[in-house]
Image 1: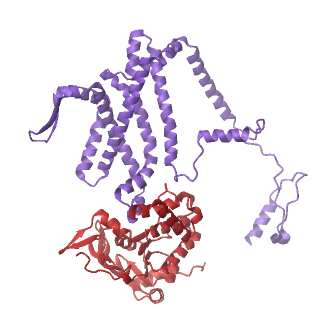
Image 2: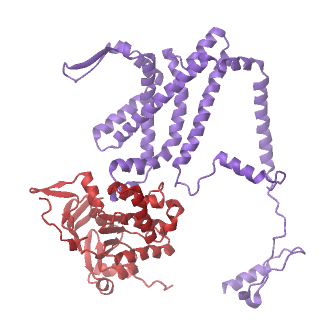
Image 3: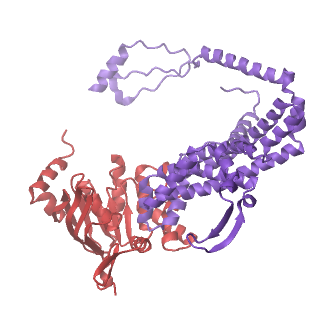
Length: 342
Length: 269
């Protein structure tokens, strides 16, 4: 009954006249006498919708980009020659190595300590929870610069550091604080503890993002607690942890520049020393900046592939990597280079 | 010493629940529930939402700790051991070992999304039973074949339909050769046309001699597969009996009023 009504309604609408070369469409036998042929649009050419404002926007932005590039290339005060001269100078490369060393050591130690702090925060013991909370509270509330100077000047507060049993006279060893806390040690200590406070929150957030049902299913299957964390929870938590964790690591790369207050010769302090001597301030800052950009770019590539690894099963089909996309592009276009099919 | 009630081999999968109580905060969700399921028996628990069905199921493998009463499986206490005149709570390791004898299938499947179907099934035998990887995979493929999904062994859960996911979850629960299987509303999260493929697998299991305890809203299935139907309301067992007794001739007014709401003839529109 309703199908008949639809047919009537449709037949009242103006029908497009089929172009002459249209092949006859097949009528459906079940439509009976009232059958009418559905209009065939297959011979029409499809014209894509036009977006004039998109072109205007593209032109404006392209002009802006061009202007910036032009000024970078032609303004002699950027002194690209000086930049090129210092970019791979031995002292700069040494500073770069120190920066990478600080980043790697305090990044790894910071995330390990952060992981422990996150587990403490999620434990059932109120003492562990409050110690972890207090740690994050203190180290997130004080400027990194202050922490760094405090660690370096620890010898002023405590002349000697000793290991023994608290509240007794038993001492296993004792050293002068100033010999123990070198510039490097103060830098690593400051960066690590600060990093741990932030990464603890990131890891905790990641663990909380995993559905409780996952833990229940694992427990119901008799999977032990350690395996539950490493095999079931962490791989899933990584998806939430990784983007923010890489943010932190990239922040840490540049955060190491604050170590210049300890006169520790990492990348930033090194270029400062050089431009104080040569007075070529901007080009040398540019040298440091370019290196920071290089490090961040490499890290971003790592981030892409590591995130992709942990997205297994989270998306139905993994998207192609840029490399795979490029290969596919050349495979489909290289054979018929002149054909433009879009 | 602790096993005063050593079970004879024939009673594999006997579940005895005695006076179990459980509260969440101020609400008492189980108010003294007692139920015996014979080895190889199929008990189906029905009742309105919030009646405590799922909680009761979860106490059987100690996912919920009971506040009172006790549960035994083949005469062995779940979650506790007797030492002298005291019940000592078992350590995590011992509880995990007990759970390997009890498979559980969840409403939301709870498959591990980052592992393939086969890896989901093979994980517990490797970790909880110490089987080799090759052996666990071979057994996993057998089980996936049994639920009709051998050809999807390398698919990730999100690449499977709801019904297929639940069948993988059933294969996973079977991987430890449990003597008891618990089903917590196994078809509630499924589209109607996918319900039957899961129920068919459970029907097969009902013939296998494994003790099944099933919480469900599928009354037709309950009538079909159960040898005991248990009606729960407000944390208590109101009535239990054969499907014939409970569905055709309920004694309690609460049972009657519940079935009058859920057993409406289906195609009466």
